[in-house]
Image (cartoon, rainbow, N blue to C red; front, side, top):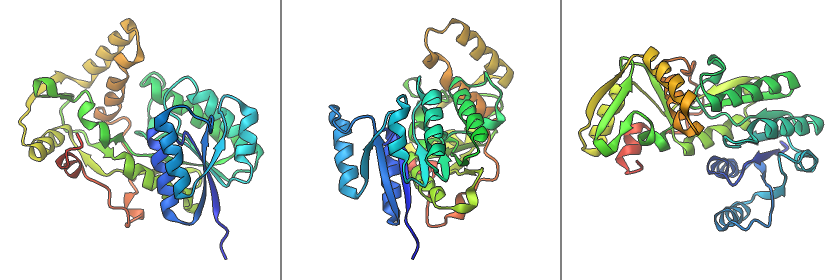
Length: 301
C-alpha cells in the first residue's frame, strides 16, 4: 500500500494557487493542505474559495510567510511544498522563510512560485519580477532541498492584455521580426502540470517546461484573427535593441513598475532569451492543453 503524499500549497486563495489546490485534489491520491494567513478571512471571495477547497477535501491551515514561527506547524509532516505567491514585497523574503521552514521540517521537495519563461537564462535587470524568482531559486539551490521548477511561458489567460495587442485601436504591434517562437499555457493547464510534477520523482532538481501552444507573433496575430473574425492592423515597433532601450528609458522615468514590467516580460519572449527548452508537456498525455486558437475561440479573451 502506497502512502499518500502530503502537499502544502502556499498562496492557496490566489488565482493560480486556488487552481493548483483543485488540480491536486482531482488526482485523488494526495493529502492537500491549503495555507492561508487567516481562516477567519473577511474577504467574501476568499471565504468562498476556502469553502470550496474544504468541500473538495482540502485541509485549511494557517500560516503567514512573513511570520516564520507560523510556518513550522504548517510544514510539519509535509512531503512537498508548492508556492503560488504572486509578485509583491513578500515574494523573496516570504519564500525564503518557507524554504527554511520546509527544510527544518524535513519536507522532501519544494516547488517555487515561478510559472514563467525560463528566467534562469535572463540577466539580472532584464525583468524586475523575474529577478525575484532568480533570487528565490538561488536560495533554494543553496538550501539543499530537492526542488522542481514549473515553467510555462506566459499565461494564455492574459494574452490579449500583452503589449502585442492594442485592441482599442485594432492593432497588433511587435518588436523584432515577428518570427520568434513564444510559449503560452492557460492557468488551468499550468495547475494540472503542477499537480503531476508534485508526485513525479524523476523531476527532482530540474525544471518541467510545458506549453499549451507555441506561436510566433505573426502566427499569433493570424490565430487571433481566425478565432475572432477581427482584422488587426500590423505594426512594427522596431528592433529588439530598440525595445530594450525603450524599456530602459521608461524604467528611468516610471513612477510604478507596472509602466514597464509587462514590456520586460515581452522582451524576454520576443528576444528568445527566456524561451523554454525541452518542453515536456507530452510526458503527461492525459492532459490535453488548450491551444491559443481554442482559447480565443471560446471567448476567453
